[in-house]
Image (cartoon, rainbow, N blue to C red; front, top):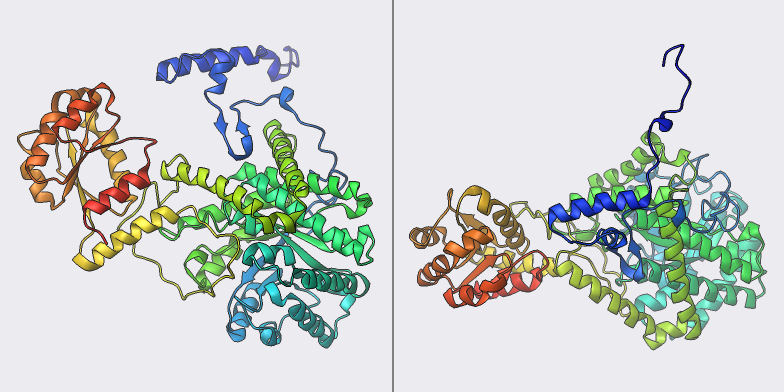
Amino acid sequence: MTAESPELPLAAAFPDADREQWQRLVEGVLRKSGVTEASGAAAEDALATDLQDGIRIRPLYTAEDGAAAPGHPGFPPFVRAGRPEGTTVAGWDVRQRHVHTDPRRANESVLADLENGVSSVWLAVGDGGVPVSGLEQALQGVYLDLAAVVLDAGADFAAAAEELLRLYTASGAPLSEATGCLGADPLGLLARTGDDAKLRLQLESAARLAERCTTEAPGLRALAVDALPYHEAGGSAAEELGTSLATGVGYLRQLTGAGLGIDDACRQLEFRYAATADQFLTIAKLRAARRLWARVAEVCGASPAAAAQRQHAVTSTVMMTRRDPWVNMLRTTVAGLSAGVGGAEAVTVLPFDAALGLPDAFARRIARNTQSVLLEESHLSKVIDPAGGSWYVESLTDELARAAWAWFQEIEGAGGQAAALRSGMIAGRLAETWQRRTDDLARRREPITGVSEFPHLAEPPVHREPAPAPIGGGLPRVRRDDAYELLRSRSDAHLAASGARPKVFLAALGPVAAHTARLAFAANLFQAGGIETVQEPGPVDAESVAEAFARSGARTACLCASDAVYGEQAAAVAAALKSAGAVRVHLAGKPGERREEFTAAGVDSFVFAGCDAVEVLSSALDVMEVA
């Protein structure tokens, strides 16, 4: 700008754009890519992505897509934060989980965490953790007036809570200053075990703990509303939210029936949710959870001061992989970031090797330092609701809340959370959801880096000391890598028995430009099943392929080239491979009109983007005689 020029805002130099103009640009790109001839809104729809729960992510959001006003931080409906200051004062609570059964070793890891950035302890007690009698040793040296303790004691919650309260009293610190959560969760235990024989007594015991906390230790919460069992059984984000609401309502009924006021009952609940590497979905889920619970509390007659949901977010075990576990560091970093941005008051980042057994000291250090970087170097806690005002996030929060509320109403209509668990209604719904997701995983529509995409067969396996077996008998525990882990285990068995992994010969046809893309696709696909890929330095043809195949030591082969080259060479090369002893010949790509011709020449199957990779790899291993 010069002294003579007018002071015009930069935006004034550009014409306003509208949605129709943007759609026309999209049309041009789609036509050039050959994806579709759609125009207008149909062109925009072609770029949309369907999520679970009937939610569709559109490629463009504008002010027209805004949802209902989310309110202000710390005020109903608490979408933006449970407190006016959010986490800006002291950051969120860095809470690490400990599952050692040996009280001495548990104590060592607890102290190491507290001395290096962790602010609270989440301790497994009873089955799957330290015995109740070892709780004192596990917490030896912990300043209970400074570090919050959260218990996960399963059926032993009452005994563990009594022991922890005794330790508070013995420490000399006023019980009124104790913080944390005693972890009573009878409905969550029912979901985990399927055993409701003692449910009524457990609910009564949890209510007595809540009464004691209300009168003697108002900083302690007696009950955990743990939604992890539903997430870990394959549930969607809305299903996780809906079951948490139904569980929370079940506890409110029990607590108020025992004589607690509605405000005191609300203050006795801490909600626990999974945080995944789907950044925006996690942010929206935590925001929607606060909005939904605020509505429940309002209908129940709670005051606004008691209606804010207290949240503990835990990085998802479903997303953790056993192969290439180092990638889990990246997944948990994104999940931890999402939990903090979403407004969780406490965040647990699980160590990258948690799926393999007991985490080692290095893995625990990386887990806690992940949060330290997010808090101290990235300053994520210094902004209240960083995603607030985003048309996409606000719209996603609204859609997720509506889907979750509908599921919550279904559960309540079936008699409440306990009845829905007993009848199998919840288990059936989660199983259906997981089956649909399993199909996406098998077809690699939901890729798993390092497992279904870009696997590293030469990666040395990572071994850890076995962790205590989790309680079971109720809802299953699933992982995204389950099907691929089974395939890789078969490959490992072949390696142990024969000294080499099963192999497939990749027959590259035609010039480099014609076969590179499908060669890379096929290598990625077969390696996801633990099948080593072998190829010649240059392309092969019908005359040279038999000798090259014999040198490879493989028993199966896959043709890789462009459609044009297939039309010229595929049939002859496939026939030559079959004559050379190939027990199965694959072709990378869809066959189109030449299916019968290629099949007659010896092609047994066609592999392409969107095919059932798990079925293809399983059948490939079958013919390789892998046990």
